[in-house]
Image (cartoon, rainbow, N blue to C red):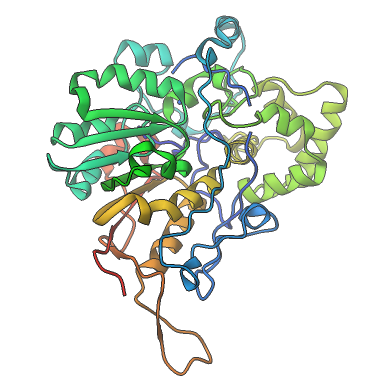
Length: 443
């Protein structure tokens, strides 16, 4: 995907700085204001059961499957269809709220931003989507040198960039001579990147859909396997910087937060329709918000007077409920939690990881870029379990072969960006890259 999906900008729209702890996930979210340019929780130990579940509700509520179905099935053959709904192309989606965009631009000129934005919000030489378009930058790819090195793309390779975004990583693979398939749920991102990379001809193609549904890609269904797979998680800078997408509590926009039109409900629907208990759970699990109960109660009380429709209405209500201390806006954690629930981010990641062995050819490389601890823990535990040849538990006379042993870790620790990249692109500072190779033979 391009830049820091959920980089550490203090907005909840972006992943929170430092991430969150614990692992949980939520539901999805329906229309999409597309207009410009795309909690806490953690998978429980992979020990014996390797379940991808967490706090009450997370995947367990929607999916009984585990990463370790290998005990009853051949490793890598199970694909929990977490996102069963077929990805729908939204005709007219890109023009759905052009009128809103025009209006929001006028409003944004008049509305003063919420004071006290965190330091990492001031980070880009490109300050608006329009400027980004003028400069030909959808957003900057994160860890470009590291991704190029570990993917090691060659002219004969077929690589899937499962989170295409602006196509920065894809362009690197194309320049190396590889064939690239770009996957994204955001029609805007696909349209932009298809035009930008058109010069590569048939070596670059796209597929619209959630990366959790990779097994639905026609080439994969036909039996083709990839030499490399990249997952760059979170929200793109283009999405974050577009007021009409509704990710930011710093800009007036519709309360949407969907990464693509296939999400069944918007942030406004989630905030206005969820029970107080459910809102508390979402804020606490996905945002690790210590004042989740107080915020949820304030949201329920306010929506009885007037339903929430814009980002600043929601941010103002949260600020009034908990007050402000320091430079970090009090709505930061809440916005992240709502965004993750709307887009089913952890569920989608779990489904994508389960599909990886069926997408990659033996020896193929998996690169995953995360931006907060919820995602990173899920990836780390998945790869740790599946790269362990033997497992042992109390009461066993001896270690036993791990039926899910499928990967070799190419880098035992997460790879972080260097000081030079962080200085040039502050949103990259919370990013982590994990790399593994699918074994050519498994026991």
